[in-house]
Amino acid sequence: METQWKVAGTYFEACNCEAACPCVFTSPPTDGDCKALIGWHIDRGTFSDTTLDGLNAALFAYAPGHMLQTKWKVALYVDERADAQQMDALTKIFSGAAGGHLSALTPLIGEVLGVRSAAIDYRLEGKQRSLTIPQVAQMEIEAMPGQGGEDVSLTRIPFTPVPGYPTVVCRSKRLSFHDHGFDVEISKKNGFYSPFSYQS
Image (cartoon, rainbow, N blue to C red; front, side, top):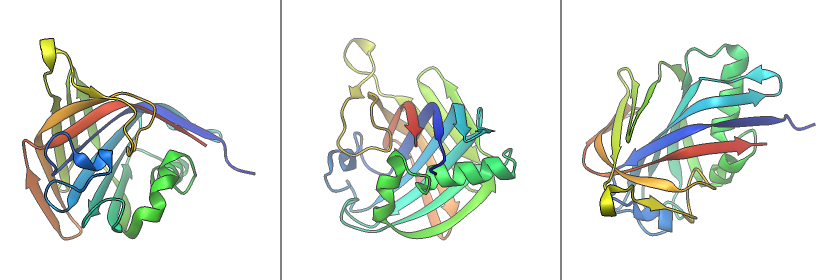
């Protein structure tokens, strides 16, 4: 019998593409490849009888070309505050192994660089989002001002890790990732944030 699970909270990401990232419209990346870092904070979550409230996860993804035509390299980081059952649940959910929306990404993945426990500091403040993994990653984005000072948002994006919600278009203050041989240091590029919910 399939394990019943559900998680909901907030998500954000940054990548090396210009804003707004063309990959979400199934177009080629701005600079020929795409390096993206995605962070999730679970406000409410259960995996069978395991509670996941308050935990975080992060995924680094590298696509060497068009995201739908090349195989990605990915690395998953799960909250070090998780106990063994929670870590197993987070790993299954955010790798796509437990089914749900993220399982649709697994055919695109060519190599899993690693899965490990890490301190993930996820922060949400007004129109800003930030995430830090010590010695590995820093990501900070802020909503791009639109007409009348309102958020710029996209709906029904064809290709997204977070379906079903309008996505706020952002610009990054910083995207830094140094692990598995990658040395990414960029700023003033693309970002997105929105709520998310996944379930079995």
